[in-house]
Amino acid sequence: MANVQPATVRNMARHRYLVYLILWLCVFFPVLYFKISNRPAPDRKPVNVSVVTVAKRIRSVSKIDYKDLAKVCNPPRAIKHGVEGDIGSLNNSLTIQGVIILTRHGDRGPMNHVRNIANIDCGIAPDQEYSDYVTFLQNIFFNMSLQFLGPFHGYPLYPSRNNCSISQLTPVGVSQMLKLGRTLRSVYSSLLSVSTSDDIIIYSTKYRRTFQSALAFAYAILSPDIMPKITFMESDSYSYCFDHCACYNVNSLLMKIKQSSEKRLKSRRAVEKMFKHMHNILHLMSSSVRVDPYLLRDSIMTYICHGAHLPCYQDDCITIDNVHQLFGYLDWDLKRYAKHGLLQKYGLLKSYGFALNVAMNLLKMVSEGKPHLVLYSGHDLTAQYLLAAFGVLNAQTMSPHYASRLVFEVYRNNTVDTTFPGKDFYFRAIFNGKDVTRSVVFCNDHGGAWQDTVYLCPIESAIRFIHDDYFTIFNSSNYKEACGMHP
Image 1 (cartoon, rainbow, N blue to C red):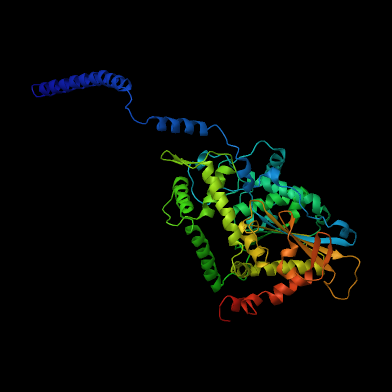
Image 2 (tube, one colour):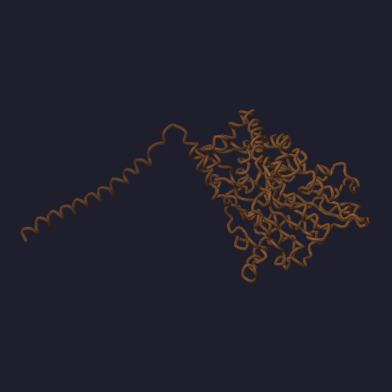
């Protein structure tokens, strides 16, 4: 007992000290907090902090209407019928035989990490067509075979969240493709009956955003019962190069084109400085030395297209004036970019495999009467390369907005009975509702069908160009020579 009692006394003393310490802390900290909270604010600039704090609170509950800036987003309400299917009185002598359509995917999240992306609402207002579409997809997922989706049967059928995800299609993007499909369905309804899977062919690059865009477009342009009869096919390349993807000279051409673009930006030092400033505010990872204004626009569009407040970083914000200056510069730059002497060569090499595939489907429409509809679901560069290859070079074609469409309409002349197959077939090229056939390099000075503003180019001109004259500009006779590769 003599050994235990001192230890017990020591423990009791320690407990007593601990209780005193706790009581003292309970009294001291409230008093300290009271003193600090009542201390007068220092005489400096507290307004900036409070304004930013209030602005952040407002940003979480309000949206901005960007009005004129939003046109670059091509919202669903802006997608309208153009000259597709309208050939005036030529309709009495010509019958549409088939349509080839290249689309750019719908609205997506940014390609780079941007600030506050989790707070941007990329959803849409309640919409019956969108709801019906989602219901249809849910039904086919549970009640029908997805075999018709081919290599895409394991892909998500539609975006599942309203949040903007990096490079992924948004509900707005789906809505754009539904509107585009419905718009073109009213024009090409005579072509949309299907008896076999060869009647309608759908290609997509192997990205979720292009597949989901193709699926929404197909649903809107076709009747739901036709969907299981169609065939989805995959392209490994965003340029649809198929078997002609490796080309040595492509990189050197691209380097020269980029150098011209960088030189134009460097000639405007104040603009370049502003873009670097915007880049540092906008991007979470801003270590890049060279600022790409086109990448800036891509990131900014995430805010613009969804009515979100422009981002801030360390009490410094991107302003509407900054965005107007950015877009104004790009309008100026695109006009010069489209006139670059090497751009058509670059497009020719990038799009050769694609052009061959288009020619193959044109020939099938002429000789077999099918497919009736071919869809290529691609990207802005997919359209840019092909349009450049065909010589349709301007600021609009070199920068296709979301849900852009390039349409090739194939017509047969019913009044001509020729012994030469294909002589009585014509095509027309339409980009975003505007006829661009006269700009196609191999359609100039060729006999065609026309009336007033309507001009149709002979199919044989397209086939001759793609198979015989494609590499004339390179002083070469084939793809390998033009690419600088040895046979």
